[in-house]
Figure 1 (spheres, protein in one colour):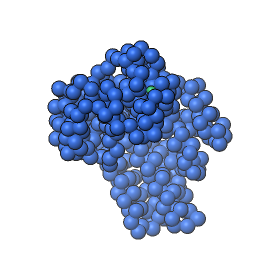
Figure 2 (tube, rainbow, N blue to C red):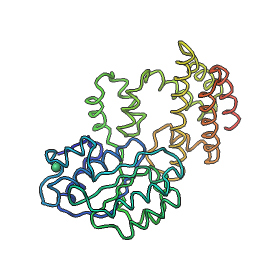
Figure 3 (cartoon, helix red, strand yellow):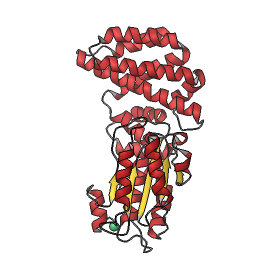
Figure 4 (tube, rainbow, N blue to C red):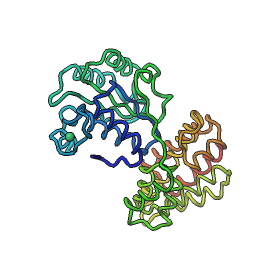
Length: 333
Ligand SMILES: [Zn+2]
């Protein structure tokens, strides 16, 4: 039984749940794959299997019925800890990991295990990584650490080598199409098809694309700008940016421009990842950007987009920003 929707990683989930049912557990796992592919959901489901009262007895877990499963579902399990903090390099601080380490040496409250889910293992500061390493080297018998990362190479090798590394892969197209039909019935077939193409087999991203308001208009604008960058077409970028910068009022214009810049930033990140680790599951446009632009160009474009986003949160005039952005972007290509 699944407590959470793990359909995008069903086979891997069954392996993990099977291991928990048989009591065959390791102390640390690292879930790898691009943003939105379901790493955290899979890790949480595995945690449910580990913590279920029936685990280790050869029965299917999680049962969904025991006190432990119910607490996990209601986010109130005393032996499940999920680190939710801010994102970015060095965002996971040594004090956080020290706190986790101290807690890990205390016996579980409820059952046999304590599970620590720490998403974005690329965000460890050096001190935090070293602190975690100490506990991974001599883990308490009852502690299980679940880490996730989008970029395997950004996780310190010393940590990686102490984890079971699990790669999550994009869903095959027919399975993704079926999932979208069920999970986003409000979208029409064309919209689902476009989300499917742009998501790179990533269910989380496809749903995000479909669920955002004006998803259709926005994705069309983003695609025009992305393609404009690939083909160095200033006019195409400018007209799409100008369109994004015009809303029914200035708040709507800012919101729309912010979403477009956010999507561009996402593509550039994926393109950078693709350059560092080819085959990282980037979508088509990100792949093309990775081919067209060098890593240092991608970095500069990324910084420029972030600057524009900061400008947007200030008092900038959206029309001027669109012009300024286009000219600045062209200078970097
Ligand atoms: Zn249970």
